[in-house]
Image (tube, helix red, strand yellow):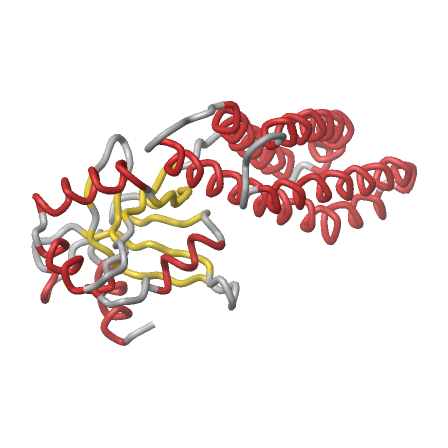
Length: 278
């Protein structure tokens, strides 16, 4: 991170999103992506525009011939954190394509002509990225049991959205935009699911098995289910390069497997977790 960005970020967080200097009077957000290579969080201050219920950011890099690093990061790991100064939330970053991108970029240039000047400096098509806030499913329950329900609710909501996108069959100009919508939301779901299962396998489940040896067979079966779902997840990610015939069926199979898995896990684990009182 440059020292200039670091200063802007500190001022932004200390003053509820208000900064001085060259950005005085401008609206900014902080966008945190995960480094595609490092796996570490990377935060940048960005200007933004308001779209249809979402924020839009432009990967202009001041007209440079290469996309900024944060754009490459969100293509690899679409789940991002957004700070507006008054709130912080999670979003899936979805670049617009085709006619949709051109329409959004023209709208942004009318409000901020500098972006048009940036586009004139480079041959690359400057991306416009929609930050689509993820659906939050509060469980109304505290402790570890509540956290498990929150994660499961998030996974169910994201998978439902992926299923909806996969069932659509666009043609013409809409096909490219839907393709990126599907890709980004599917990757966000798959990365989150993988992290959740790894955390369970490495931390929660060994601890619970130690406390409840009689559940050893249950955890063995859950481990097999995790392996099956990981295989389906890997197939989905590979198929994202060409989500044509058979992709929707893959999503439907993932949905059936995951719903059965989550239901069974909750039936067995929630009483145990609630008894912990933590």
